[in-house]
Image 1: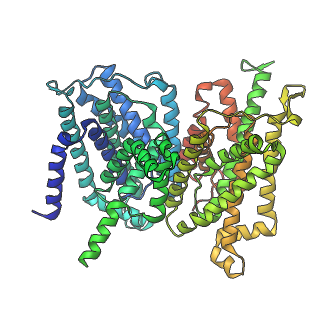
Image 2: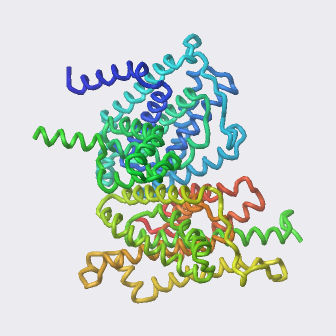
Image 3: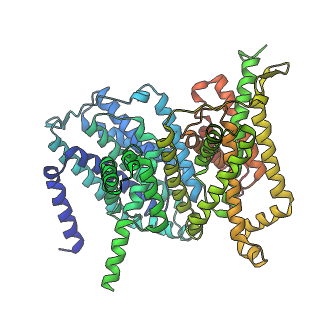
Length: 323
Length: 294
């Protein structure tokens, strides 16, 4: 058994016993965000495209999934399909506009187009505006597996995550993925070697958007609601943070980053209390209300001093130890 | 009298509002373009420093009792110095890296600044009074013109044009343009390029803070006023391209007016029209209206 296969086996076993140890709802949420971050990483880490509008795919898929299940009465598996399909289609539209410009313009365009969708969701009837889309039923998967039980739901989410992760893993390690890496390293050279760079970029964008949509619609299925938070630009920033913190261009980095950021967001109030007790500074007690300050600081620290991220640094250390 | 069923008065009113918004777009996109030219960084913090400018004016008034006119100078100065500190301590380390790191760093800073102001002042807006001199409105025949809004347009256009003159027509501007083209060579001629970079960043930031002070009396001063604006300004920058200074000013004003007109004829689309125009420009002329991209 190779070292990588061994590692993945251990991870799968951990994933299977996790709901007996940790709170399943938290785990499911974290897994959805982990898939979201992995999908995002396919662009930033392996194609060199910084999309700052990925919230659009997460959120729109969530809304469409909710709509399909709640209003149209579709079963959950078809709802997930509707959500994923919507995100992929949206990815095709946004992607084909955004790849017309390179570099930092790409980030600005995706950000602007995602903001347009945010305003659309704010005004449209079916999203429920500020109230959000509430009361999405979990239903029965394939008509006979009840998802009302959190454990059953967890294993479905885990399977979805594993499927998405496998798709990304296959994409990265395929000849197609090699071309993407070539584009990231040197776009003019890839072009001069005869690769239709735009087509490759667009396909990568659509795959990434579709998987983000899968993550978003799964999240709606788990939580039973979808709100504007998921289409807001803060969410686009959050997925960048998860990927940056975990390690851009590493396979497991985004998963690590997503779990850390989600844990932090859930526990930051308690952490602030603790700091206040130890340091005697009362201000720390308010930190729970302003998560953005902490996420912003992590952003700044990562960019200034920690650009390889946690998994990236760990791998660099391993390599040094071996050499 | 009416145009397509809209009374002329209402029409001119919305046009003026559009022009006011356009002035803000123009000032912010101008600052972004100047900073990008020399530092190669898209300054996401631009919205946050605009917000800080408004808060600086608010704090000057409520804490120190300093009124609007001194604040118009002091607030941009203070925020500009803050910007220069940021440049010296943080941005400096990123110049050799990919553009995206500068974008991400300034994004993180934006979150921190917004969070800090929100934890101190809350999310609700703070009122800032219109200065006595500019209260009321003037009847100019075809419409009643609110004095303060007219002042915003005049003040910001003057600042934009002065900036254009300094950069395109003076020796200082020539150094700046040369630094944008080839910093190593300019450095070799004995010009202190790092200092120039710091000052440029400070100037761009001060320009945004100036816009913030101008905006304070017409909108409620609140921590999120900047980030809502900056994303539209990004779209403006994509539409105009960052190649030309006059181009940035014209694009900003023009889009403000288009937005104002949309508010008259199809209000539902007024928040998205700039993004739609961006999409169309990307299809027809990807480099932007005034762009000089390779």
